[in-house]
Image 1 (cartoon, one colour):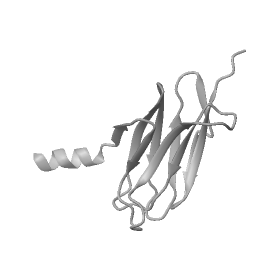
Image 2: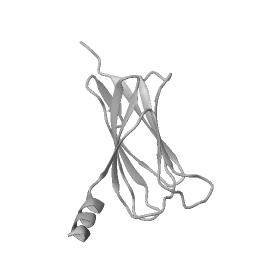
Image 3: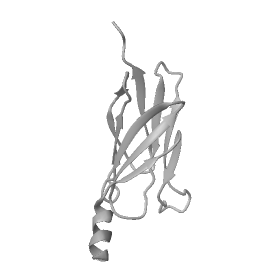
Length: 123
């Protein structure tokens, strides 16, 4: 029975709640500890932005789900690992009253990707 439970938990996507900054995993290059997620206010016309710093991590491909929080703004982020050196797919779920542009991106290994959050215009 414990083996089945362990196998079931291994298939369950990881879910983490964090503040505006999060790191996870162990990088293969030895220069960096982990991949990183950041939620910050932006000055480029958007309200906030999610930045993903992709590192080539040890371990199998996973789908990870995180919730980042910045001053009460909660943003859902789903990262689907690419196999081997394939890019990761990063998707942002904007909170009510906001939209993400773009909503989803691919981020190559050892690269950064940014998704901006904008308030939905009121008519």
